[in-house]
Amino acid sequence: MDTNYLFIFTESGPVSELVISHINQSSVKVSWMPPITPNGVITAYYLTLNNISSSKFIINKNLTARNQHTYYLSGLCKYVNTNFGMYC
Image (cartoon, rainbow, N blue to C red; front, side):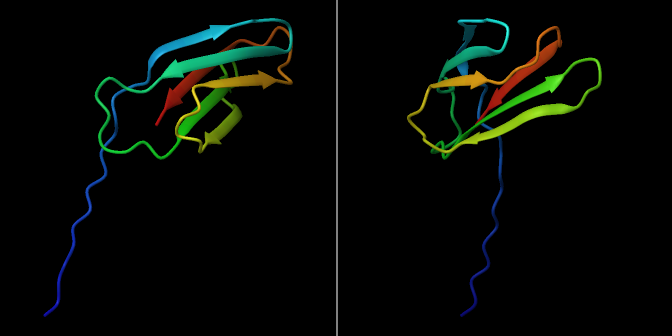
């Protein structure tokens, strides 16, 4: 007997308590808590950082430690307007 499976992937809610701190000219500390309404088991968090003026991605980081809730981001450029994104 053949069994057919249907997989539907949906997004979790946004991470909660996202905080950008320890900001200086070339680094920041990013911290967060899991989503209030996760959609199943969280397997990774994803951090994105893009240049607002050029819309180019600067960082697209896959953080696979499920219990990791802090990341130190270094090597940033001075005077570049950026936009952070965080999802799981």
